[in-house]
Image (tube, rainbow, N blue to C red; front, top):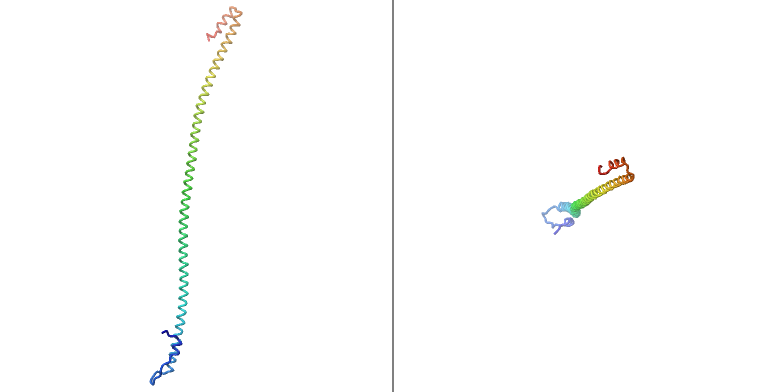
Length: 178
């Protein structure tokens, strides 16, 4: 059975001949009831405060849980971003290496092509030089033949009117002596 301050105030005792002083008992009961009432009020306040604090604690725990989840998500995002950045950097490096290799291959191909062209030009130059030399030699031979023919025709003209001194001149100019 729960006692309330009102129960204490309304409590009546049987009187006996040699009992307690009723005024004193009632005063004491009144005092006890008042004190009990203040304790109950204080208890109710504390209970309400405890309830509020439990609610706040629950809210704070929820906020803490949310913050921890957010922090974990942020950490995961940072890690994921870091990994993605590393992968992207690796891809960029690989692409750059491949591009550089392609450029080098193209440059090597161009170099080989130029070397082939240079060797072809050298062969053509040598061939042209040989042909030119042969042509020049044949032209010199032709000039020599033409000079001999000119000398012979001048000899033939002179021979048409031979005189003694002209004959000696013709013999001296003869190509055999040259």
